[in-house]
Length: 208
Length: 419
Image 1 (cartoon, each protein chain N blue to C red):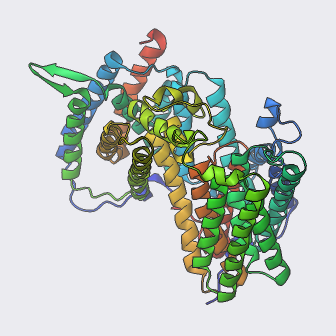
Image 2: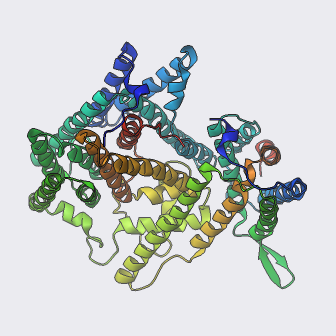
Image 3: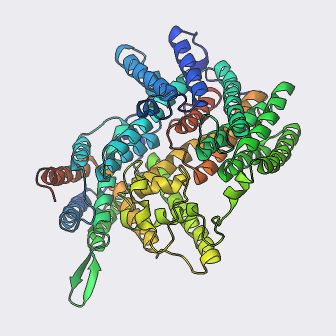
């Protein structure tokens, strides 16, 4: 099956919206990489693997399976960077704002531009993957509920963990929603891959 | 309603190449009963035991055929679903964050070998309805060997030794998935097959020493009970369940309440929560810090104790006593878990669709296959709650199940199962 056969395009395309969409997406990826570079909480032990994978995503594959694998790799790296900065905050006067929200905002606006282009693309693999994300929510929450009841019964106190886990799942889910469909675009994918390739090349040579 | 056999698959003649893959698949299934016997301690044998080796040979064969043969299309049609490839890709990526290289690398290699090679091997071997029909009986013989070996060692040598598998949780996952699968198929067959199914069910429950095994077997049998169309089959399943429960009570008396203890929510001290559930909590806690990175494929043991927080660490956790879903989440992150669930959803949907399409056909064997695959799938999901289907030696069972589901779809479903 050819990659182009995976989706059906309907509606009117507004091409002029493509430029702000790409610019915002690229901006989000650049600041995400910079934040991740300076605020990494968990060390990347073998950046060479990530470098090789980013190089792989630079190619345009006609086979649908390889194209989806490319998208998964890019999504994984984006999510990894969000994981690295998820606990970090940026102080603004008396307030402080989470770094992840600073990156999520341009990503979300870029997604809105994408949606306004009225390319109602229906990806076959999107629905299944989306459902599996929802199932991840259900699986984790059911386990948390079960453990809450057990801990309450045996030790008398409630759930041992705060709800940061659920908040994290929500954050990663939003990142998935805002990036997955946009990554279908080969141009956008190449820009993202190039940024990641440079990033991992730098940390492979110089380290964090 | 008549069933449609995919003519593209059923019409061509047997060739030497087909026989080779059928023999290889049979060998892999039969050898899976013996687990790592006779070289349990050898690391090389753990990697290259007979089932893994068969998968490796099949993978090598596929590559050779892909390079030299003109008929590439059918080989490409045996490439696993994209969810499996995505899951493997995430496993490879997660190696970047693991503390050491050898363990995640070995783990991912085994995973890739069995998932890609195994799926190719079994799907290729089961590309004809005749072979598919006999394959269930062959699995039944293999499961019987495993159960008999377990009963023999538990009664004769040590009640804590579980045949060739040695470990209660690995053995439980092995029979917990395969037993309902073969029982449901045999129960729709001749009188001798029905007797064999009842004997396997009773002996399986008698030999199982873990809550996970018992619950997954019962879940599979109950699924079969709900899905079966004929009342006679339902009565036989009911007999199976009743005899199995009696066997469980009998086993508890003989083996010092071993299975009963595994159901307990508290530790032996009567105060603390069972370490298994504390472990589940630790794996959820781990997701807070390493939600996407995970610990690296197969490396959950390196980190989990850091996430107990104020819960007690009693060191009473037995080997392989893991929740498969949480372990995958902890090892490969939430994206890895999402890819794994995507895989389960794809094959689960295919299995249920096969059942819907085949439940009214005249061919009782095709219908029995659809029911037994769905029952096996439910057992697999249940077994994965109390142990992981990803362990070396039990992963082959999961791959057999996926291959059966896709082969039934390929032969009787009239489509290739592709998206």
